[in-house]
Image (cartoon, rainbow, N blue to C red; front, side):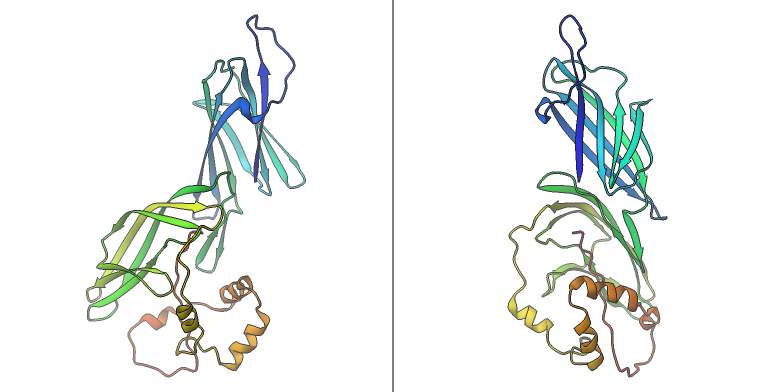
Amino acid sequence: MRKILLTLFCFFALFLTFPKEVYAEGEFAIDTSAEYKIQDSGKTLVTQTITIENLFSNIYATSYSLVLDNIDPQNPKAHLGSKELALTSHKEADKTTLDVNFNDAVVGKGKKTTFVVTFENSSFAVRTGEVWEVSIPKLGGAFQVFSFNLNYHLENPLPRSASVDIAIPPDTSLQRMYYQEISPKPENITVDSDGNWLARYILKPRERVDIKVSGQVQIFAGPRPFLPISDETLNTNLKESKYWQINDPKIQEIAKTLKTPKNIYDYVVKTLSYDYDRVKPRKSQNSAAFVSCRRTPFLA
């Protein structure tokens, strides 16, 4: 959670100065745009572009304080245009406050001050196996909109054509997808019984294809009305099958100790790994157990 504190300064026609005071939010209109760039190393560069608009002719901002909860900002800086602004940082308990002082007064109703605060952080992105888990701090509002770019690398190792499905992020109760580009275009896009969106590609023998998917996603602060999965689908998912061996004694024993989805997720990530050799052409082999994995990307 972020709290915004504004230190205000009053002036009058005679330009007499008065002691500094803190005014309510109604004195200003504040617009914040946050950008998170995650590097291969896992370090995240955070860029916040902040615009403060004066709602009164006799009140303007002399400083701005950004309070970060449970975030350790590294190398914080602030600038207005090409000018660097004075920035101080102090920490109290789990809160870190970045204080930005403005060099010049921006006077007049409707006048705006736009400046940028940047810092780095190493805790937003955590790599777990082959998956990057990204936690973005929440900003105010009923929803937020993010741009995204996804890359898929497909390969057909067979001496004949083959169809391959990729899972793209679907609409859910917490997110709404807006796709700008899927290149190259798939043969078709279908929705399976679990609500996954599957884009199908036909690959030629020994063909490799790189697929780029881009667009925007609207993330909601709370769940919205959404078509639930049917009872028939849920009951089907609970049945024994070749790849879902729910009656296996060892699986049942493990299931008794994993009581929550989070515990199940942690167990799968720490215990299981992908066997990439299984996608290579070879003769069928008997096996006592099978693991079926599909990485379905949910953005929220």
